[in-house]
Length: 180
Length: 303
Figure 1 (tube, each protein chain N blue to C red):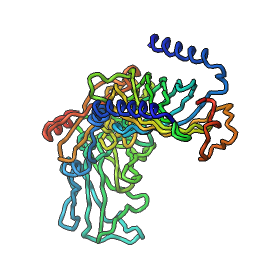
Figure 2: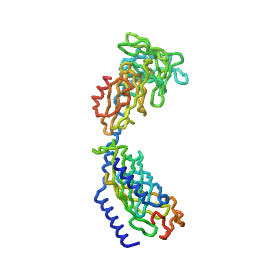
Figure 3: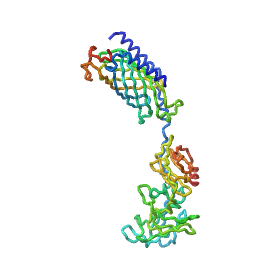
Figure 4: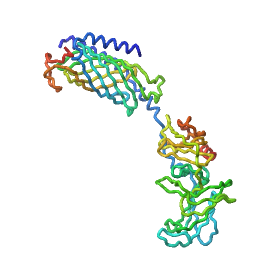
């Protein structure tokens, strides 16, 4: 666990150090998550720190007790923007997280335990505006489960003047600095 | 948008999706939890109905002699002169007397008739129900008149009182005060009933050691429809837990915990434990196990 946090801190500080105007490129957001295999719902919170084509995205998610699997995740994603189509950005992601499976004692699995480390990969689609809806589809290697995340991010100090958060198409010259 | 970017993106996307497909998603986790879901039980009422004491009927006319004696030894000395209809009209022969007798704890369990009055666990040496009917109408005793009854007991104790049961829904509460007393006789107990209905030969044992709050949980069984009884053998008190799974019990008392369930196929299940009330063991984990009808009968006989 210590190694994970050390690794996380190194990545975060490396990005912050290399980001000239970090304060203008910080997004916060919420998401709704559905795990297809456990048929569970969860809310999620995330922060996004973009740098060129990459973003670091610390995030948490909690699957409440009304689900068959009750658990929470706290982890870090690395997003890589693959290509842009008009105002849309397609990205892939890698994710590592701490997973606390709270009702693991109800499971008959031999290796069921509360503390777990998970790795995920996935793809996502978002806009390039200050107010960005996004959708992600991810695969969890640990549990061999997939989840769909739909949410919205808001980027502070975003200065694309024609953006009101609507669905207008954006010209490249007016994209958010996050993707400059 | 450069073509190379699109190609790079598509390749990445295909790689990721390939991993997903090759990884073959698993429902192992959720299925492992579903397997551990609690076992549900059916209500015990139908089973109890096959086991509980019958309500005996006696036709009272000029040909009989007193007393009426029930299967379990209860003696009733009925008198038509002290009976009346609810509107005060007099009663003529013949009329019917009905009797239910609950003496051992087993019969009280089958009838779901605990010995709790006003929240107090009472010592009871027998619960009986005596009613009278004429032409389908329930009769009552005239004011200030009584029926003499006797209840069998080989070791009668002094200080036993007459508690009358008040029906609250499907639960009979003995009230927190007695009305009249039982005297000891060579037969057992005797009293003059002031009203027809449920009557218990009981007393407040006045526990003095304080109480301990007990909770019952289960990782394997849904206790909602399980019949839950606590029997106090030393004081002959019986407690039933209804929707709740917690109760206050007198500290230091010996108790027998009896939980009964039945599944959809009619298989009986039970949990039985004998212990002393203690704050160090007041959280009880219940795991129901199958039991035959014969073995359960023996277990309840030995309470």
